[in-house]
Length: 160
Ligand code: FES
Image (tube, rainbow, N blue to C red; front, side, top):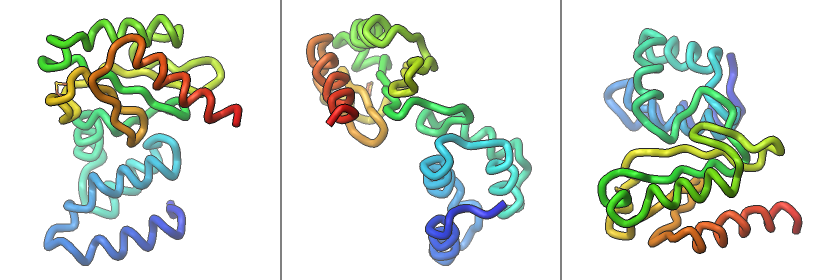
C-alpha cells in the first residue's frame, strides 16, 4: 500500500530523525489517519510491515491513544474529557449535554456525518477543566451553554 505523496515524503524524512524505526509509529499513524479518515486494516498492516512490528503491536498502540481510531468519525470529532479534574468541574454534564444535543452516544456519529462524540480520558487541559477537544482544537472551562456555542460554531462553518 502507498500513502499520499506528502505522507510518503514525511515518512522518509522522519525516519532519519530517530535511531529506532518504531519511533515514527505514533506521528505517522496520526498523519495517515488524517489522510484516510481512520486507520484501516490495510493501513495498520502496511505500517506494521514497514516497522517490522506485528500488526497486534500497532493495534495496541492505537487502542491506547484516544486520538487514534479504527472506524470512521464525523467531520468534527468531539472528545469530552470526564477524567478527574474535568469530572469534578462538570465534565459529565458537558458530555451528557453533547449526547442530547447531537442525539448520539459514546463513539456515535450523527446521521449527516458532521459530528462524532467520544468520552475520553485526560487530554492534558486539566487546569482549564472541564475540557473537550474537537479534531485538533481545544475548548476549555466548558459549560453546557459554552458547548452549545462550540458545536453551533462548527455547524455554522458548514453553511458558510
Ligand atoms: S482531567 Fe480533563 S483534561 Fe485532564
